[in-house]
Image (cartoon, rainbow, N blue to C red; front, side):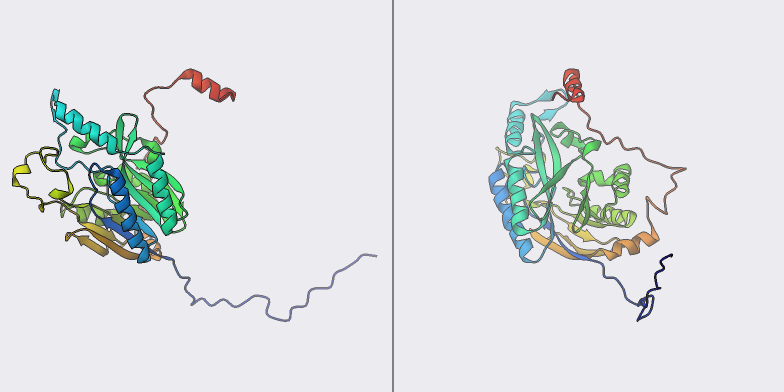
Length: 349
């Protein structure tokens, strides 16, 4: 005798009514860009200053704090390091030795300290540093989550002009976009932001909060940042230092080449211009040219979808059968030891 199951009895409607008028809320992120000067040649003092600024930003409810290019280690504005074509002076070599000593190892104790700060104040931290790798320096951005975890780094792939005599070149292995609790975060440094293929690589990784630490305080920087926000359909957070001549060592220890005679201690040598821009191109905070400041805004992450509806440069507005990009994202090393490779492949290392 076959067993049969009685059909279930439903006391209510089979399908629940859905309120189509309900609007799911998008998260909002409180973000701050720091506009402040390095304590030049004094990395411990710079880290102390960074913590004070971080604590203040966290006290105002910030969940993400972005520092300027080369904040730890310093941006050597005005210095030539004694270089002319075919010659380097003894003083210039000593200047580089001191600059090298102010840089930090990654990983290293300063990275651990920055991670601890991020965890202490429960903020996501994006920090511009000068990274020391042996005797080569890199202009680098470090990323930390709000639990105090070090996420990784981006090395500037193309130093600008005379920067190339003191900084090495990053490769495709450090162009990250990190998925975090507050969105997908990445960074490009200063004039890298004018490199369309680099931007496209970051768009393809889904960047939502695009950090642009810089040393460019000119008014013309602002339209570049607006363009990136519109092109990428992302928030752009650009942080620059505000520096006076007195923030650097006095002459003859440190000389602003070509302009030193015109400067007094209170002369502004970098005017800031830090800014936060929405995916629709609206300026949410800044630009600030008045002095050291914390510049903050609330980022409605729902605005990203609204902007992408208009223009998604690596989605519905792309033509991959006509135009495409290949990114070589593996590390490039000047020396590879075959014996080490063989040991790794054989499982002996």
